[in-house]
Length: 344
View 1 (tube, rainbow, N blue to C red):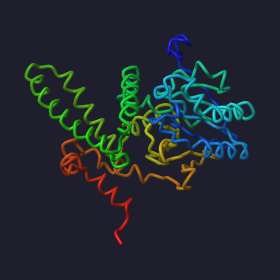
View 2: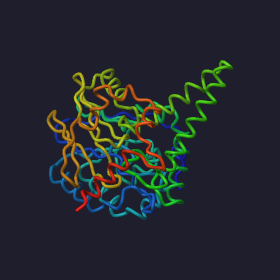
View 3: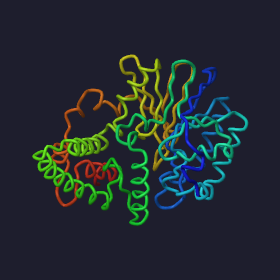
View 4: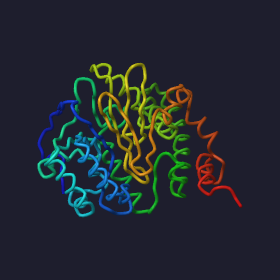
């Protein structure tokens, strides 16, 4: 069992590496205990192949957070039991080529195990003078400011998913299970209760709880509609403030290679469920791909955010457009129809 206090008080660690060879970046592997709520989905062989390619290219590997999911697994022993050969492969690569590990919000205890895994562990990594690598939870206005509270909620979330055998995730279209649809319906009722409560609090002049509740609902719907974790703009702002021309993140699981007003935002996606995304930084260029499909990502997933469409979205507007009655939602029904294909 790992404990947050076992490593003593933590000081933020910032490191730099030269930009003299290619850098491959993966994030959000979420290696768990191998059980029903382990979202890595047993893609160990695919990750072995990627590590072989990193070695063959003479590249540096950067793991940009949440590779080991302590919140899902409970402790490191469970992860070691489920993915021991893969962790050994990482350690072997670290011994010969070096592996840099940028800590995320699901793996704060990684500092305790860095010697065992031979990783160079930090909270912020610079590649050369102008590329900043952070996991991204620090740019997340909800989790970044409430990390301990978020940890408890995430552990409970994993327990519910495991206990009831259903995914409760965003976006709904990708996890269109009966349990998830019921949860979305219940969340709508919760927002109705919040609105009533806020009306009463406003009459009493209590604005603090109202603003927090309204922000939470906005955070939820933006996660669902295509601005996951609300971190895109804060990450770009932080990069510009620190003098970086490129910022590389994970955290939101939404891959991207976006140039915005002279600053490049690279999100290396995740290895959860059916995805296996990674980024390659080489000679001032960036590429984001999926290892399994070969698909290359640009800004396509971020266009609703870039064109301002999401800035006009409210939860009520989203609900009126999405809910079809009887626990059916438009995005999920369209996705289901597309997967079934045309009828003969």
